[in-house]
Length: 370
Image 1 (cartoon, rainbow, N blue to C red):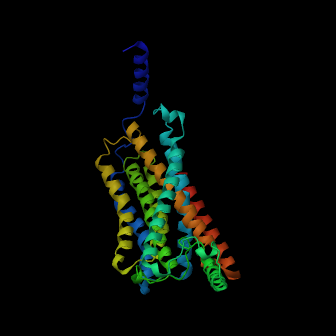
Image 2: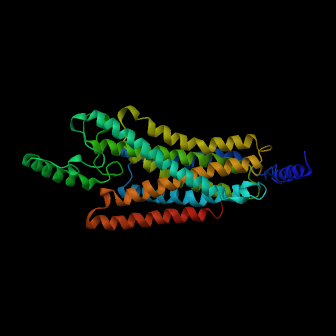
Image 3: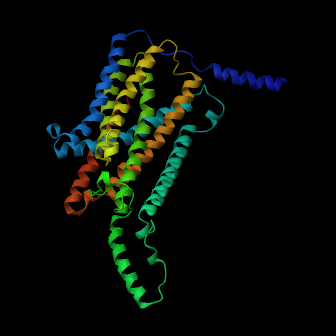
């Protein structure tokens, strides 16, 4: 090996050695660390299950305005989580000076977030393409193009066909008020037990669209919940403040996820799925805290491997929540929903917007401590 090669290897190893191999765990607050498992489990359960229980059981049904606030406040929380609690920590982790090499030369956190966003959009395009194919097969007798009736784009030779075209055009214009079909969140949905039967195409597209959005949202949030649990378990001087902040963080984030799970349309054969999704969110962070306590003497959150792992997964989660938050929770809810139509709907829309801003603002403020 030449002297130049040895020099390069030594520089690489020296950069690796600068990453910490221990953690800030100081042996204090052991009782509080154990209690965090159960307290955060309770706050997560409250946020995730309350909207679901309220939508299923009349004896604990919340007033409509409470559900309204929880829904849009949670939307703001999720969007702020993506930027403040995921993307910023990811940039810190992957931009840590001890990593060196390509991590010092390129903002990988933002690059991974960007790639995730485009990958998620492509995946959703493919999912809805498959949904279109499936629905066209089921409604073969009266199928039409996902982008409109082909009568709008073909020329008819006879007068009879022209009259038929006019009828189709008027019908298509009426249907186009629901544009875009699978992205709309209309108040009228097909009964879930009838999904898969030869009924209205738009209803089934709305149903599949809701499920895709809810599963993607849960997937992004669970990634994030694992790492904050590990971080809390091995935290040092900032443990107390981090503990308090995460209790509220998990509750608010749970409300955002829980309201989306509760408002989705679930078929009878999937009636346990929303409960399992809420349970998954409830248990994810407490289990991560328990694991962190088990390895608290050996888990190094500032090591090279931990920094890269946390940074990559936080970047992926940020991309997922940014896409879901901006597209599903903002654009679709406010622009394509029938909920805000008419003069009365405009006032309601402004109320929802300001509630969402409060949710985002409060969650962004919590980023000062966690």
